[in-house]
Length: 467
Image 1 (cartoon, rainbow, N blue to C red):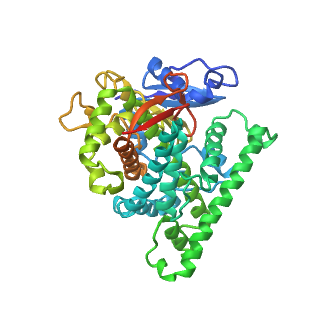
Image 2 (cartoon, rainbow, N blue to C red):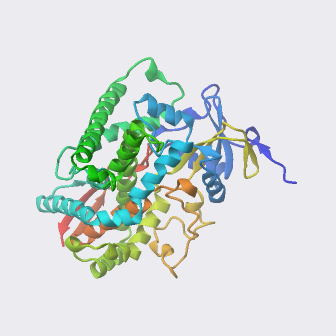
């Protein structure tokens, strides 16, 4: 019979008195610090946040087993939900648990299912053409493009149109209150979730007052979206039988009162979709374009495929996007090397065993999502950017389960099809329309990874010229 260990029996970095290992972690690169410990201590080890022990799980098979035991065995840490609620947020599908999650999940999955996304595709192309126009002007002016900022605008415009039926058009410099304030809200959620002491409950620093202002602006923007959707439903009652988007579907469910969805869930899912959909997709796309530029042979293959399959951005079809196999492989390889969710924190809902470690109910876990996926023992020449790994019959094939950029199990990201479609459309538009003069930082150094709600590249700039 296999002998099990207790969390306290595990190796790990030596904690400080009272503070635990928190003083050894840099807030903006906490994911890299924990990854380094995983390389030192192995796939199962312990660390402490204050006096709280945390089981760190790094091996991909162990991580997969934990993620697949959601929502019954594990949940997002209750501290994350508490921080969100304290900041005025409502539980959307990302944070909700149990029956509330199941009720919301069905509608979110329907709204983001491939058939719904394909029906929205012409509008997605329109958003891509707005981004093309913006970059054409930048190329004519010789202007440096803030890559992360422009790609966030693109993602916000896409998700607002698909999920909420709202034309925000931040790309053309329209009302960008949502994108601008999300850049304040997201890091605050991550920062407060890792805080040793909730100082903000007792004293308000400048960053907390700025956060309050951004939260108020976000709340108003969301209320306006909900109000506009309710006005559409009132003007066209027949829409209730066939809601045109996620927001309308959730409002109808909330009004019925017996579908397990209320007004708080409606607002929570608007903010969740905007917050999660903006950063994850835009940062993945930014990392992929950087890695392509750093690997000219891969860039050339991607460009040749785009010019062969989808040469005209104004005439893009869903079939063309589905035919961009190499570009899809580029996205998969970028997510392996630069997962924008490099760790997933969880809390045990019952006594369980992870590997050979007993995990009591209420224990906190830290799932490292980038460990085996960048190890030579699991991926040949793991540090290299080789999209061919993901192609059938390609060179140095990779075990596709070693990388889990969208999670695993029933709580896999519901927006994965939309995210990959956005990535392929935006990059195909870029490669078919422009020559990339440069993508990098102002100092010419490799971009640093900024840890927060998602992992983003710091200071990526792009220069384009017309093909």
